[in-house]
Length: 116
Length: 111
Image 1 (cartoon, rainbow over the protein chains, first blue to last red):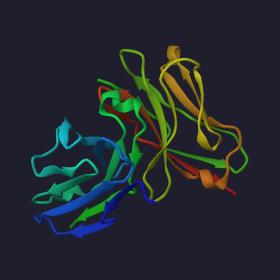
Image 2 (cartoon, chains in turn orange, green; image 1 turned 90 degrees about the vertical axis):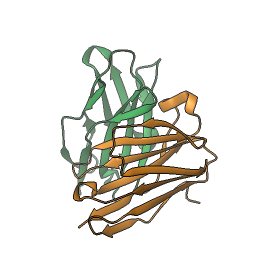
Image 3 (cartoon, helix red, strand yellow; image 1 turned 180 degrees about the vertical axis):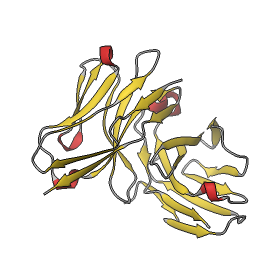
Image 4 (cartoon, rainbow over the protein chains, first blue to last red; image 1 turned 135 degrees about the vertical axis):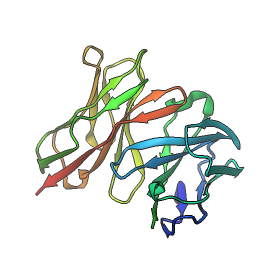
């Protein structure tokens, strides 16, 4: 059973389009995250949600909007895609917000986004 | 601001040889340190973590890491690598409620 799953795995789209990436975890965790990994493999957190509440919102463009319909899902919607949005986006989850990073984070397989 | 530096972008070792991947951090207080591995096309998997106590930490897959406060380092080691260890390795420091990652070290294994 996949613990943290993401769809789609690959996403190729034109500049200016709007796209969404979905993430689901079946671990019963309270906290979920979105990370962006750029072409140089540098990994940086974008957002974190705990029980559907936004708790970390790094400096990312307003075109990126996370949505958490329930604590098992955290979707990432991107408006007006730009060339620089091309990257690998990872979803992750951990058990307890209060423990913060002390809780092990479980990562999904990533979504490879290419904007043409 | 907290930061993590992995000085080696790419390392190649022979199968069966020993391995050490370097990690240096910048953090004002007692650091919480992690090593993650990313296999090709996969997400990240936690290898080990250090919060306090014994400075030599054992992890999965035969890896260990040693925290050296005086050198601000948390190097990852393995006595004998296997071909399946070829992957990208990330060091990270806990900051606030998030992880700050280094830029990664790509490990290639020669047969």
